Image (tube, one colour):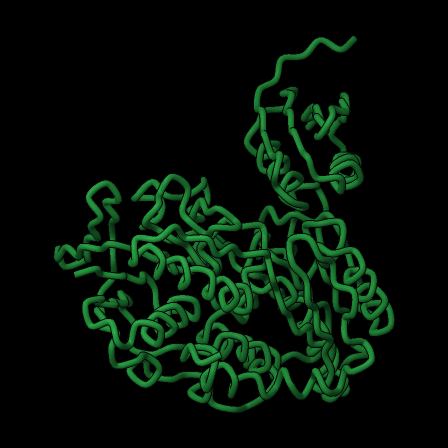
Length: 79
Length: 381
């Protein structure tokens, strides 16, 4: 179990791809190294795009929580 | 007297004003007002071709007085504040205009100054007439090397435009016989060059065929003009001899100052009713909205029909029932004579993308300026 406190929470439910991913990128830009950012997305495309961007940008995907009609991504800014 | 006010005289604003003017021609009790400081209108889709030819840009301009219908009053001023509680608009000279129903068609604000560049930096774009003339000169003087193309923010006007630019550039360099001395690199913030996967796959194939290098997940961070490099937020960089960058896009100050927008100043708009969030008497159309559709003229065209119907319902004290379904039509140029046609909406991905008729669509794209000034912006179509 990872212990974390969310610094920025983005509710991008109802927003279409690439909205949730771009919102996450904006939040990571604004946050500090070590911060945890949460993004909620109902867009199915986010399941591919968000982890792919996190891997590319070398941040850390802490968890992906599947809810009934959306997904919750928790990301740690690593650099 | 019911006053319908349209804020902004770009394609969206002029189209709405003219469509309303046609529908309300016999309703003398309704005053239609357009607030727009400019005297003339620029056919922006045409700018894409002008870096690669020598034609005067005046061919793309037309006076607003020749576009706007007689029963629309044109106030040549800049609006600076909307008081939506009292339904008033303040103009730059202090005059206050009342409205019963308002349409926001304020477009986007290009924040070139954020890039911190000078004319010596060989960094260009084609999103304004002035910039198009500069990039034309830069391309004339270009002898070979690295040309890098990248948006600096998402969203930006006309999502295919930088892709189209890359295809036309490839052709232009081949005509100049310096394509073999030039690398074209296309950097993009998203994992694909177009949001819709089936279209993105086609574009990637064409990039490969035309030897245009594609790099995904490149979110612009800054330009190192001394070492001629563009750097990404992801930690990557690309060297350039000529950089084509789409300038940062934001909503206009009036949106931010009136508390009607998101953090970037795009108007918070219901994607179906096109009403501004929390405002029953204000609609938004075109590039100024935060709706998840392309910032493109065809979106404004189809949305305009919805808004006009709903405004007339409101003027007649009826419930506005028209809804926008995300309808978008888009010609995507793949060379000077070919393009494919995309037709999609919120719920419909493009099924036929016109791959069988590239030449016909290429001709249509070139002739489009006549439809634009002759039928679309005048509200006839």
